[in-house]
Image 1 (tube, rainbow, N blue to C red):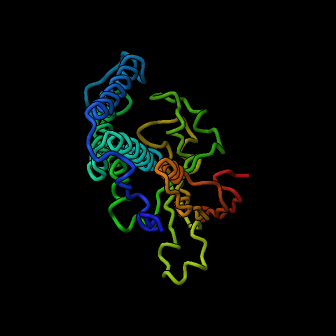
Image 2 (cartoon, rainbow, N blue to C red):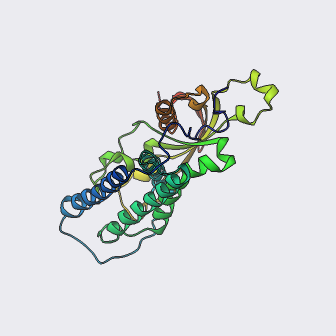
Image 3 (cartoon, rainbow, N blue to C red):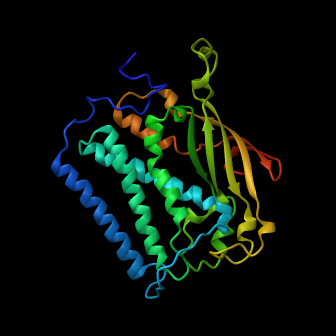
Length: 293
């Protein structure tokens, strides 16, 4: 046994990996990088972005009809990526493990607030409280994985494969059609880890890497007509899709070095191709979903 029982406490940091003292130059470097990223994003958006010289008064928008709310999962996922990235930066600067997670969540939340404030002035968009809430929860998700026991048994994952180009054929009025909005080809997953729930005596009979996942996506009905931000022209042709699949828990390989654990941590957010069955609204079998063939 090493210092970590990686089956149950995979995310815990070895105190020997990182200096326990805050490095002022590193902290300044992290803060400067964040501010530069904010500045670059705002300059690109306001000067050369979605609406160029057009603007509108600040307004709110609750887009509950857009993509059958799957976009909220997208905002959550982007928050997770931000939270993980900010955490690595704060930890590298020497902040404590807890404070790094806390500051990472707050940084991800402030980023989503800044983005939606910008959207609040856009003629085709608006400030969405629920988008901000989704992204903020995602920013604190890495912290929950570290400190909330239930997250030892389930992972949230994402998969993407272009099976249809219907989204890219639309007349996108608010953007150029970036893949992050291509929800027809995205699936969001909850991956459950039976091995970690088994009694110690039974684990020897079950592969530690084998997991089972439930996924949610949408069909082409959301983009059958011209793409619109506010609502689908005809909700009746749009459906959610539900999947059940085999999955792989990459953390079961128990890498001990910090760089390997960090790599596995990011890779484990991706749902790798595996045998899958769609159970709603129709039943289909796929050998290596999200690849449909």
